[in-house]
Length: 214
Image (cartoon, rainbow, N blue to C red; front, side, top):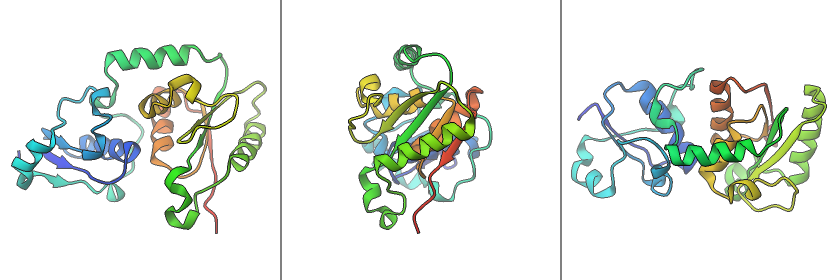
C-alpha cells in the first residue's frame, strides 16, 4: 500500500482529473485514491480505486500527496481506462454529440467564476473578447461553416450555450467538449483536458489560447 495510495486536494474537476491522470501515468502500483474535491463527480468514472474520507482518515499515513502543479506533461496518449466515463454516462455524452451537426466543431470555453480575482484577473476576459478571438481563429483556420458552441461555468445569453446541451453538468461539458476539433480558451485545466482527450481521440485540429493580461 505504501506505493499505491495517493491523495490530491488542489482545485476542482479539471485539476483533480489532471492529478488522477498523472497518478496513473507515474505510479505503477496504484491501489487507493482519495480526491476530496471529486466527491461530486467520481461516480461518473470507471475508477474503482476512489476511497471515502473514513478510509483515508484510517490509513492517511500511507497516502502520498499529489501536487498537480509539479506533475509532468500529459504526453500524447491516455494511459489508463479509469479516466473514461461509466457506460451510462458515456451513452448520454454520445447522444449529445450525435445531436451536433457534422463538420468542424469549435468549442469556446468561457472561464469566469474565480478567474475574476485569480492571479489579479490576468486570465479573466469578458464574453465579447472570447467571441472576438473565436472569430479571428475561424478565419485563421479557414473554416467555412463551423459549428461554434460556447461552454462556460456561468449561464450565458448566447444561442449555442452548452447549458442547453448538457444541463450545466460539468462532467458532461468536459466530455462533450472533448469531441470537438477546435478550441478557443484561456488557461484552464478544464478545457485543457478536453483538448487533450480530443487529441487522443484523433479529432483535434487546432486551438487558440487567449494570452494572459499584462
